[in-house]
Image 1: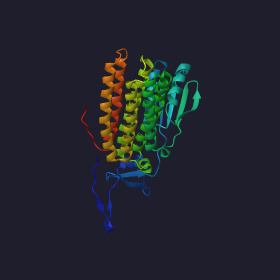
Image 2: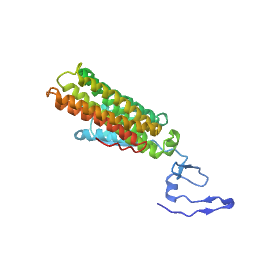
Image 3: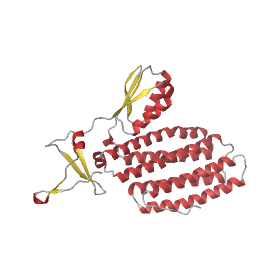
Amino acid sequence: MDQRKLQEMGGGTLLVSLPKDWSRRHKLHKGSSVTIGVRADDTLTILTDVHGEPRRIVIQYQAERINQLINEVVGAYLLGYDTIMIRGNERVRYEDREQIKQAIRQLVGLEIVEEESSSILAQCLLEPKTVKPEKIFTRMHLMVRGMYRDGITALSERDKHLARIVIERDDEVDRLYFLLVRLIRSIAVDPRLAEGLNVSYIDCLDYRVAANILESIGDTAVDIARTAVSISGQFVNSPLKTVLIEIRSLLEIIQNYSVRAFLDKNRADAQAVVDIYGTIIDKCKKLEKIAMAGPKTSLVELQTTIANLNKISRYNIDIADLTVPMYPMIR
């Protein structure tokens, strides 16, 4: 941190000099223009009028480290690199090439633009200014809500086909999550983009946390769906099925409130989340009592499911907490 004294000119105008190294790095000279902005926290930003070059990274291909390479590709995407070159001193093996292509297909906007025997060039064609964090977050919300709704339905109706569809949907949630993380990182390092999208640095932190919670809800929905595939016995016309459906409806309601509270900063909706949470806990206790009184063949799976239903409701408390801290008594 460099402290500098202000100089006063005629008319009360205050001047401060720019660091020499920074000015040289950005090729500034007498007559150059810079943009000064005021952030939400009342600090100033100084931006050069020259836009930076697209960020490029080269990742070395080695057949024995393909898994690490895949992680590096995903990491480069999340860090906001525009061009990712995968290059080796040897030919990229067919099976490795397919793994790389599969990883790239998981990353929204990233496309292979050039391919040779020993290299693959991928470029992100997505323009950040055209994508809003709120829209991506809302799509994630709708996706994971549908996942646990169908997962609970598959469990209550013993529909293994529907359960497998839920499990497959998790890949799309991951795609949206990666896209949102990339966008948030881009906003955090580019004040122009933050201003254009009307997203503050605090908003970036909140979106990052909330998106991670939604991704965890999706993972929990997958766990419920996997239980639906493996569990024995049926719930048709049973009290167990009735309570499961009631909890399913309450989980959809609580998530609608939590997401709305987060996006609109609505304290009333955040309080509604806490109220509904208590009702869900009571329903889960009722479900456990019914399960304990029934056949023991699927008791472990049912108890695991009840724990997962509790987790989803608690995750929504965490989302609402980003609006205003709410700490319900955990029962």
